[in-house]
Amino acid sequence: MRNYEFTIIFDSNEENTKKGLSLVEGLFKDANVEIIKKDDMDIKMFAYEIKKQDKGHYFYYELSADPASIVGFEQKFLLENSILKFLFIAK
Image (cartoon, rainbow, N blue to C red; front, side, top):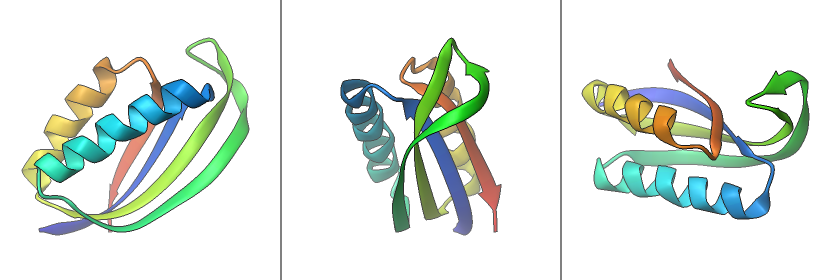
């Protein structure tokens, strides 16, 4: 297991945020990822448009996960419309 910092930006629509958040946390639970810390950073304006959106809902996580599972998450997150951007960083 390795420690990661994970930041994700959802569509600012509350319904899309809830849908995306349940998807992300469901995937983490299925892969036995330990969520050490979760921080709701609220809705923020972007410096430039991302997928035709000018603002997004930010969430920050500290995780403990198997490195092989991270690649699988990235592939699934790219297909989800409610997720605008995401970033995994190894600590």
